[in-house]
Length: 268
Ligand SMILES: NC(=O)c1ccc[n+]([C@@H]2O[C@H](COP(=O)([O-])OP(=O)(O)OC[C@H]3O[C@@H](n4cnc5c(N)ncnc54)[C@H](O)[C@@H]3O)[C@@H](O)[C@H]2O)c1
Image 1 (tube, rainbow, N blue to C red):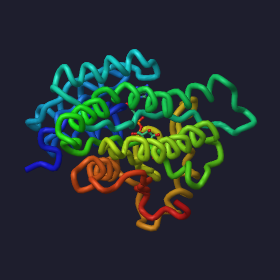
Image 2: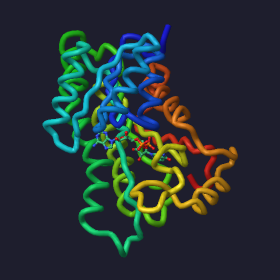
Image 3: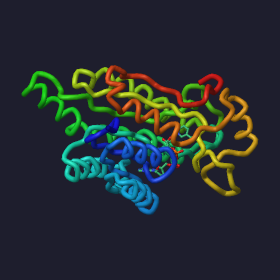
Image 4: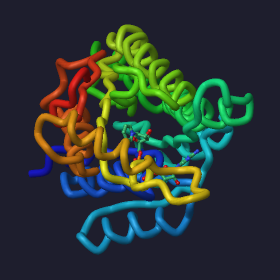
């Protein structure tokens, strides 16, 4: 028995890092997974890993910054697997710079990838999640089971983080969105929660290379480690397990929470 047997899940940004680990973990627990990522190669690798382990997966390279693309993603998921039960909003990006160096382009890009993708993906999922629940309420008096939406915020939005005004603005908005949608969608038994990863080892947090848009300067990496009570950086699988718990039946009475996955990081 898997914890997500017969469930259909869409995971955005599932080609790398936390999204990949989440897609693989969900499939291990019996879910059919739509692996969504802008980049086809890593997305294919994730889907391949799932299939080689005996699971079911399909790839979508839709960029949900556009609403039409989000609709194609969700409609494609239900066309392939018959329904949609779980949406993991994980796609995200950083473009760190001090606030006085911020411009509209870098602000909009980070807000788009972190916040607008989540807005559009969740909106496009509504006919499949809310619509399906509403039909069951009409026909049977109640939704047949709980459907799940998770967002991916960051401990940086809880504590603040110098150099991440754009990122923390987006991630903070996701916390507010989580709480509001939990209230609005609760009557339809759609649970809405967020995970707040701390410092997780992925390409976003690797030692910054000269000229790279991503990464964290090594002295900051060392400082971050000192703040983590459990004494190590997080792994993508640590966050995947939190998404899994919130998506599983074990969390059917949990909605509107922000779950830090941060190893006891100071302040988070
Ligand atoms: N790594 C950390 O320490 C950390 C901490 C807090 C929050 N997060 C959040 O966790 C999530 C995953 O981060 P990660 O560290 O695994 O990053 P990552 O860069 O390893 O993976 C993110 C994936 O998202 C994809 N992506 C980017 N834009 C996309 C779009 N518009 N549509 C679909 N896919 C898109 C990328 O191609 C990439 O494969 C992000 O939301 C990030 O902000 C990460």
